[in-house]
Image 1 (cartoon, rainbow, N blue to C red):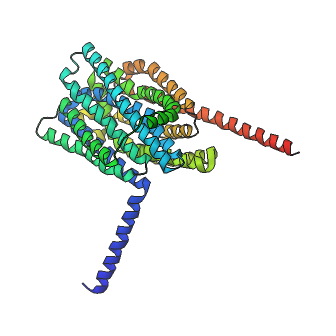
Image 2: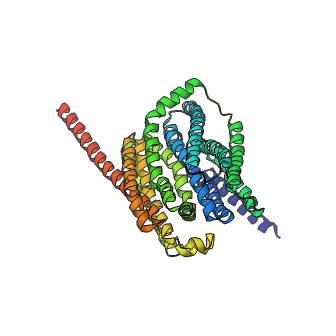
Image 3: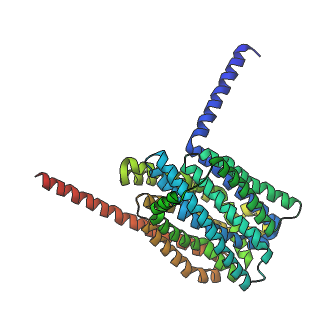
Amino acid sequence: MSKLKQSVLYESGQRMNLFYMQFLRRRRYQTIADQLVVSGSNFATGIILVRGMGLEQFGVFTVAYALVLLANSVQLSFIASPMITLAGLCKDEEARMRYLRGMFGVQVKFCAVATALTFFITAIFLWLKPGFARLDQLPSFLLCLVFYLMQDWLRRYYFAVNKSFHSVWNDLISYLGQTIVLLGLMYVHRLTVNTAFLAIAVTSAIAFGAGAAIERLRWSGDELKQSWARSRGISRDLAIANQLQWFVYQGAMLIGASVLGSEAAGSVRATQNVVGPVNVAYQAMENIVPLKASEEMRKGGITRVSRFLLLFSTKGFIALSVVFLGISFFSREFLAFFYGHKVAVYAGILNLQMLYFLLLWPLRQFSYLFRTIGETSAILTSSLAAAITSIVLIYPCIRSFQAMGIMVAAVGGQIANLVFLFLTWNRFRVSNGAKKEQISTEVEISQV
């Protein structure tokens, strides 16, 4: 090879390396890479669990795992969501780190309380339904809960301190690690509900332990009190709202399982897993858009942040509509390919899953908007409307449509949620415009 060719190849390689380095340094791409790890691993994990345990045992796992997701939903709204929004509004790095250290203390205390409450709820459930699962599965389930919550908080912490690249390696340990372990358990025919929870617990514990040691996480009593005082108002509204929102989907699934059996819950969860890769966009958005919204708020107030979120919402909604419409034409084939022909009969549920996720996109943008401008009571009220709608619809829907009725009720709740938030924002915008006009008039009169 000539020296000229070697020089051209070397320069080309250098430019390529520079491109990748710049690519990886950008926060949005680090966030997307992290979410690809999480959503991709969850997608593979769902397939492994269905094929390794069967739809009925996967249904048992799904019902139990719904409690883990419930606790994480509380944590997300009570701690992580306010933490990401308020960290972006901190005036300097020192104030941000004091706030985040205090929130770590809040997280530890929350995890202890959540574990105790989950223990009592699960014990009561098994006492009422002793044939649903075994009591000896409880320790592994609680270990899964504790370390899942702690590792999930750590990955949000990385985004709050602008170390999103660190979340990638940490999630590789936790999520890709659990997928590998579960695949190994399936291969040796040891995959059960119990071993699945243990696998998630162990990989989450290793990831959290490594990250906590590197970051030297700690807190003081004063930092905890100050951080909680700052977060308390927004945390209260978001915590209640998220639990109502949890009920719209997970609650409907639990009610459906109690009426139709665990296979109904398994079918809903399995079809949701097919849409799982779309969670790359949703979870990446959850980690980066609230920070960006806070920055836009600091720069230009309500007008600028609302314009940013409207544009972002429109682009995402159009892109998702195209993707979901394409999948809907092959929904039966999708399910048959991933889970087998037994699950393919639930293609209608998959189509409703996609509609549910499509409605979730503009809902998230409204949520970020009201969080940033400090009007979280609107999120609480709209979530109440969604939960009431879902409750009213769930029983007649599952009686009429069987397992598909679970998703019909959930979609109905999301529609009520979106309509309420749209009307609330429209009233707020009109009211805010009237106040500005009144202030402008008063200034002109004073000048005269």
